[in-house]
Image (tube, rainbow, N blue to C red; front, top):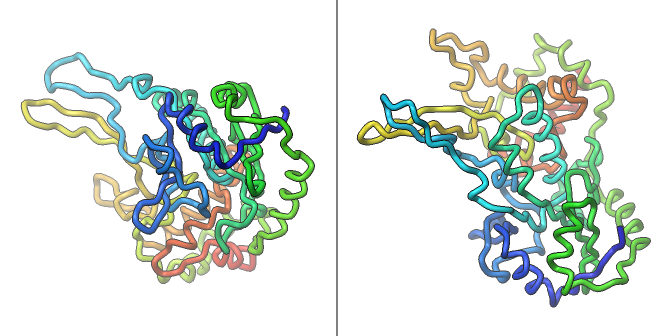
Length: 338
């Protein structure tokens, strides 16, 4: 599809055009960047490395009401996702878009999740290529991604200096570019984009060899490596709550006043001790050693064996934000060497 140009002085007008939808973009919140719904183009902060929290929460909310009920009454008031309207997530990084294509595989597996599926169908992803690594701990090229990956995206933007190159990648992307057609010009330099993509991949400094790792991890079930790599873990769950591919959730019924209540689901973490705690009091993962083993095994062994894809996109958030500096690449290196 032809590459268009969006002059940087027209970005504000383009965002105004997109506000006919639910427009989500990176925005500053104190000292961090988060994705949120914006109502003013000036809120969008596109000159960023990567957001602290992935935009996954816009399709898979951290806390979500599934339906409401009144105790003793058979009728349920189900959530109508359509009322939220069409959504555009503007300016997300390729790793976060690729993460959503990985999460898609779970929610479209043996049982279709209607809440996730509807939001996913109603959301258009507009990516922002990484001309520079967003973090020193990026390792997307080790896990099947790249700074210019288009996997999971509908539109790709590339910062060309005084303008953004705009590439519609599918039918959904074409419809979006039609919405802002009055702000676009012809003449995007596709050859230069290819050169920039090759250069950007070469700037990723950290890496890990993943060949055969999914088969090796199960052989280390009783290895001392898990005790070693989990020794400093606090069990805070930061690594999972900031991960763009983590998808575990809990479901609870909350009863309020007058017998009214709701069934809701919220993100959960395999790093929490309560995650696998049985009603009997038994916990098959009683310590951080077992929970760390499960986290690494899930991403690099269980998920690949089921879906043929590593459930990690190399964004580096778990490394950057861990309060005790646990490094997933260091863990993987020890697993490879074990």
